[in-house]
Amino acid sequence: MENLSVTNAQQCVLEAVAVQGAESVRLEQSLGCVLAEDIRANRDLPPYDVSAMDGYAVRSVDVAKIPATLKIIEDIKAGDMPTGIVMTGQCARIMTGAPVPQGADAVIRVEDTQALTENKVQINVAVKSGNDIRLQGEGMRNGDVVLTAGSEITPGVIGVLATVKCAQVQVVRQPRVAILSTGNELEDMDEPVDPNKIPNSNSYALMAQVQALGIEPALLGIARDDPEELAEYLQRGLHFDVLLVSGGSSVGVHDYVRPTIEALGVQMKFWRVAMKPGHPVAFGVLQRNSDGTPKETFVFGLPGNPVSSMVCFEEFVAPALRRMMGHARLYRRTITARLTHNVKHQAGRTEFIRVTLAKEEGGYTATSTGAQGSGMLLSMAQADGLMVVPADSVGIAAGSEVTVQLLDGTVFQEDAGFKE
Ligand code: AMP
Ligand code: MG
Image (cartoon, rainbow, N blue to C red; front, side):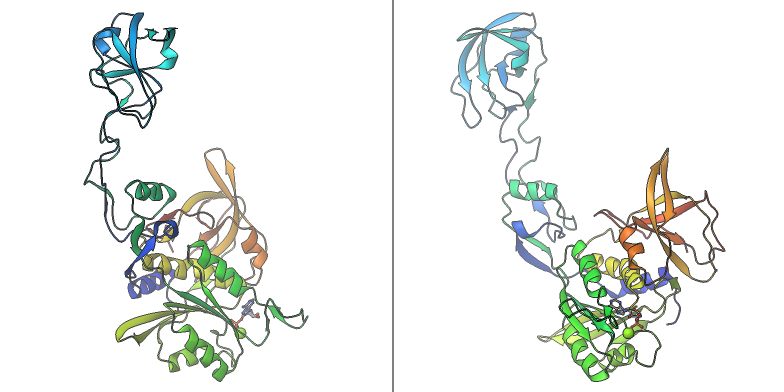
């Protein structure tokens, strides 16, 4: 299909990809993954009623009239079990987290008391029954589902998993991603500087975009614009779940990517999207047979221009990878901002303008990073976000509200958040 809208192209990609299967990983390796199982509490927490404060466990009726003097019958530290029962006129010294002894029904924090002798204390406040007591099971109840399949594993989730002693956790398997750059003109990192060459930045920028999603990609290097060499590199890449190919997808006579991947059995779904930058972006699927089980490789042909490559990653590859990883929120968070200057636009393609954001009373302003050529990688390096100019726009006036996709951060949302 030619010249899809960005939304239709996103839909096409998301319909093709599916959530990966599950695998078991160590808790320490699970941050950023998505849970593939429900997790239940394996005990009540707290296991019994415990003190929320360092202080004294008392009978609330004994401190109805203050000040009240009580006899201290024991010292209960966290990890200790009480030995006595608190009777009328008595109390126990208690530490945060220690079990509340029988007879007591409230805790008075130490700040509200005054030590009289070694075993006598004066209570200076009256409290209700239950004061500063954490009830058994108020944190979690044995057998209850505390985390559901589909939840992203955040540091807080790791804490809960550790609490229920989940040393191995079932997560959605991360897709394996390979990155291949193409072009005779490219010079790789380890090659000496040649003024006639173009440094390969796409492999590394794409690598970082994949890493930012929590996946470690494989870098396959640079394939030259030669059908045979290209086929060899592509074949290597087609063993992965996702293959990103940078460059060579335009219509130049030396742009061999499309015919070569098609010859390798990849079924192209689209190869043009009505967007700027990123017009010549392609997507295809290879049905392969791995160990007798059918599997797919999703191939993205990303434009060679460095900004186009990164923008197309954001719009198409990132949501696809997030879906494969099991996330429900696939898209970068969007915000509304006030444009600080006029923006020219020729109707026809959705445009993504690199902007910086600044806080102002009641919201944010968006300002273009300057020249927006698709080769101007600095515009991407400086940007806080991508401002979306709808395809049918004939320009946006200073002061207008615009939608900006945030490039930074780990928070995603369920829909693309912009109109075309
Ligand atoms: P192409 O899509 O192959 O026609 O490339 C378009 C432009 O992007 C050309 O100016 C290339 O030199 C440049 N380009 C292609 N691949 C890369 C890369 N890996 N890193 C930086 N620039 C690239
Ligand atoms: Mg090229």
